[in-house]
Length: 262
Length: 348
Image (cartoon, rainbow over all chains, first blue to last red; front, side, top):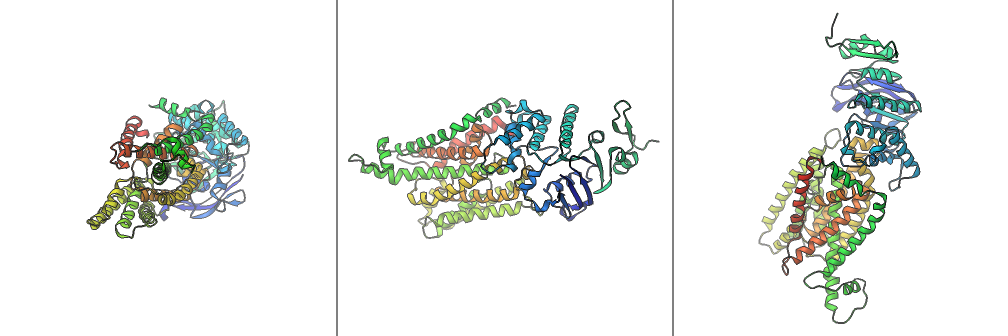
């Protein structure tokens, strides 16, 4: 489902504005990355899209429906979120956590239906956590936990997936695995909005990128259009090398330590 | 560390276990109730207990026994069941709400506020079974209202850390109020009432107190049970709950109201009985895991059984004298809690 971010402005406690009239639209099946320096408003924007925060001005629409018109439950039926870090209060088993993804779709006293069971099994298979099903969520590694929360989000069968720096704590193998799952979801029609710091990852995995700086969208476009030296210099105040691997034709971004060389 | 123990706790959660668990629990509760009636200064044979409870004709010469069963022990045991249930599920709700097993109705200041309210009624109002819970409820509500207001910041979010600190401070304030009320009322003939009640006990149980508490506990448990799945969602954090379609603000308000009503009612009729709301939910979680759909009923039954057995100990250990039951629950609960702290440490 198409997400429309329409002239969103926001500030915490009425102080310095975090977002100023940000507008974006992400289509069904599109994987869109938000990049930008710390404090540029990426996470805040995701939280507004998810409905957790209410914008000071502007509107979020899922399809044609403004999110402000939807109940918390209706939002959760359409939209799932995976954050960088989520702590669990008690030692639920991995399967119990994934099964929570069905909460928005089932009645208060409903038992797990065949449909729920299929969604849970599928999500666990996709996230490659079948072997962990009966382990405690508190007794597995951070990388495993992140895949469990991805599986929970997938069990929600959302039309829209929001990801807030989901791969930051993952090693290379799990980063790749995580992003391939997300790409697969996008291919099947899920709208994906991803906030990410790893520019090379963004370049490889996404369809379009939006560069946020000081609460404004500096530029949006295909990865090669956005990830340029002048854009990144302006947003991050560093010099970078943007290259393309001749063999695989993948774009990479390397920051230069000495900054203002040449 | 401790992962082995955790693995083991996960074993009790199979589907088969879930199917038999309710029957085991009900059996346990029935056995506890019967034991609570049979055992005492006078031992009453089980057959007589059963015929008295179900109103069947009995052999001659047992009229006294029948009186003991129907007028003394049965209401006392039932009050124990209700109070134990109320305290245990309040504790379960608060621990789920705070995502922290150290929380309890006492930590929030609810019990302190309820005590002050009840002391006020006992000392300065005409004696009444109905006024007492009302006084306790207003005291408990006042405490939780102050705590909640203090802990709610301008952006309408509730900080759990502030909530606990405010709860401790407000609880201390209300216990000072209680002491001051006792000081004012000292010399009056109702002082012994207050003292009995401060120590906590089921000794003054009668059918009226059972009738007052029963609907509150039944309705309160049912509503809390209907929120079990939302409490599970809350274990992923307040924003996590929101993403699962559960509005954490609405849920918080329900939980606070339920806990205040249940705790105040229990405190009003049986005084302050500690540790049930702290230890029982934890023990139940060790047994059946953290899923509140199972945890809430198990806590309810475990709390009921624990209080009835504690009361049984309280009236038999030093018979014919009676110990305050709060002494027994603390003697059992505090060391168990310290043991948990020691073995499970920060993970607790």
